[in-house]
Image (cartoon, rainbow, N blue to C red; front, side):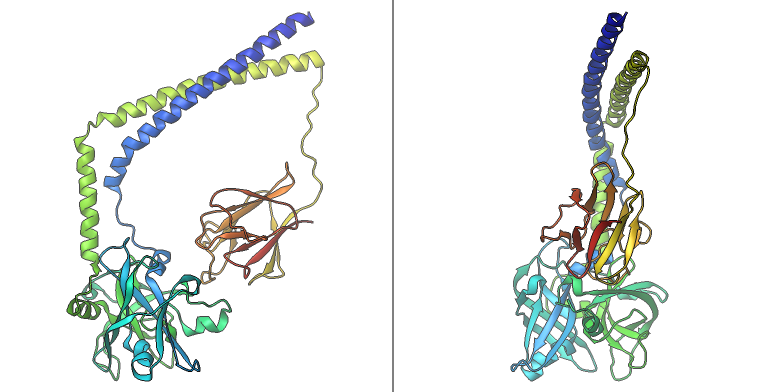
Length: 451
């Protein structure tokens, strides 16, 4: 009766193929219905989303490096600054910094430049300068608006209270002492958190009001921004105690706004920014309510119906496949399953350059995720490591192909192969044992290996 079994097997194969085609078509209907459902649901989510604040990584895009250089190139001085403007997502032309950062240019004839990525320098115009006991501030105007930096959002400093968390961003001198790649671009910035300990301090020798805080800063932070926990500007880092690193002072944001107003320089307040967000949310909510609310229910019904059809055909195909397998087993009386052979070796991530140089880390059965976030990564860099994103990249060993698989998880400064090619976000790249790759640059280089 072999011919009967063969006919039955042939019919089962046809049934599997037919169910597969029908499952594919149903899955396409399911995907289309799900896309329509998401489109309808998106309006509601726009109405429900609130302001989550600006992250330190986002605020780094507002901070720029100020470099002053003596005419005979015998001396350098630098500081930090931040961009102001009327649109968070638009181009900027004005930067704010301390007066003492600009002082070598004004009094000693030093050249002054704003340094961006790839060493690009732009010479600004000093439209306001004051460095005395009353104020330490300067406004710089670029020759034309640029998109390399984003405008900060400024909070009313009178609303700040002691005990609030704060974040200082800038280019401290001490960063250059330990970082051989210090270049003045965003990757050379330091991000340091702390607490506002006093909101009404007038340091000795000056008459302007400051916030006292314990975020770490050094001389190069002068003129850099101090943000609150939501990423709003509340002050400008200006002074520090000589006898300690934990007592520092920032000119309050309202003093900065007074000068910007006097010189007709546009800026964004947190009140206006939040009002705009609320208006956008209200408009989205009104739009959703105005539309036929049954759309979401109808779209959900279509998704459920298409999904159920897909599951039915998948289950039918699976049943036919099991029946076919049983016939095959019965007909051949034995089944030999050939799987992957374990060669007894283990997979390792070897650090060839960087703070972990010379160390090897076993890549277990699961994917190894590399970055600065200890909650989501299995291989964690220190928080202040330049160029390393919170969730930078991931790597695992594929026993089937005998290769390692490297994926960039959307890092800010990229993941690079040994030939210098930058990985595309989310696109896996196969590496043979012994291959190397780098995070951000050659300063953080790793090799994948089998031992």
